[in-house]
Length: 82
Image (tube, rainbow, N blue to C red; front, side, top):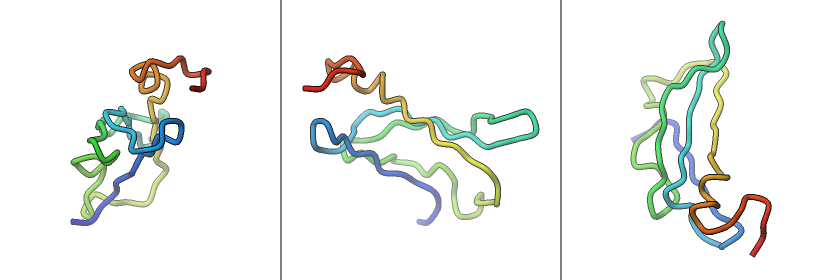
């Protein structure tokens, strides 16, 4: 299976970033518009592709990793370090 995916690692705690929300957006004439929102699994990967090989097209895209929410869920404020 080929297409567009990502892998998120937690360098603070040293491991995969599980349950991290990732928004995927595509640039249009009116700005960036949402395409898909996925969450990472226990390995820090998504179970679904953001784009399949057939959906791949030249353009401008953006990933938004919701790190503040992720670290709050781990008991940290985003500006704190363990």
